[in-house]
Structures are given as structure tokens and as C-alpha cells.
Length: 216
Image (cartoon, rainbow, N blue to C red; front, side, top):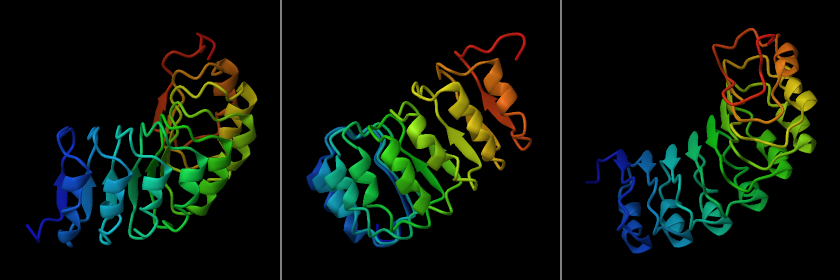
């Protein structure tokens, strides 16, 4: 299978770190999906880190992978799309090592433990167009960094509880946004919508389970 460029092993729950050790032989691989492979840990990421042609990687829900494993991806400089959703052991330290991935255009770190410090790190990804921060424990302190990512086209913040009404209004600085998900955010109200009125490029706005009323 040396000519295989795309491989999806999602939810193959019997695959272990040992099985992933065979992947570096697939030198043409550009896309790899390992979502929900619950037995994979940091050792598997060492092998994935040898796939130098990878541009798209998804390990969503692989909860045994921690910062040590994520750091193994630092050399995959062709990476454009990285999905780390629901890596419950991933925190700010785990993202800092990825600064070399300057080609990233899409990053999903939803349902991770990344906080305000990570938003400063993300400024290194100048080509980032799509960012998912759903349910991340970020606060007002991190919002100024987020609002500097004015190249973003899509932003998902589902269930981010800490952002105040004023900090959410500050997202109006992201004038290129076409997709904004602030559903299940406690402080989204009619005033928030007023503060976001200048996002004239928006094509999709998700507000489910917020405090928006008829006035909004």
C-alpha cells in the first residue's frame, strides 16, 4: 500500500500503539484519521510524527494522547488541517510545541484543557482560517489575543462559558468571519448581537441555547 495517500482508521478500537508503528512505511500518506481510537497514546504519535508528507491529521477523542504525544507532531511542517478535539489531557504546554506548523489553516482544539495562554500561542499561525475552541476554559483575559486573529473565516466557541458579554462583542474585530458559532455561551444576549453587527461577511451564525430574545 505504498501509494496510499489517504487513510481513515477512525473508531477501529482494537488498534494500539504497536499497530501504528507500521504507518511510517506509508511514505505517500497525506491524510490520516484516527478519531476514536481509544487505545492509542503518546507512543503512537511518535510514529505519526515520522509521516513527513502529512497535511491533514485527526485524532479526535483519543483521550490517552497528552502533551508528550502532541509534541511529536512538531516536525510535520506540511500540516494544514489538525484536529485535536477531545484530547482531555491537552493543555497550554501541549500547543506551545506546535509553533513550527506555520502552514496550518484549520485547527480544532475543542473540549481540551487549553486556556488563555494558548490563544497567545495561536498568533504564530498566521494562515489559520478555521479555529474551534468549543468548551475550552478560556476567559476574558484571552480574548484580546483571539481578536487579533483577523484572518479567521470560521470560529467555533460552542459552550465557552467564561467570556463576558463585552468580550464576546469584541469579536467584531474579526471582520472576515463567515461562520461564527457562539451557541451555548452563557453571556450571549441581544446586546452581543448589537456589538457584532459589523460582521457583514457572516453567512452562518449559531446562537442555540443563548439568551437572545425577540429584540435581538
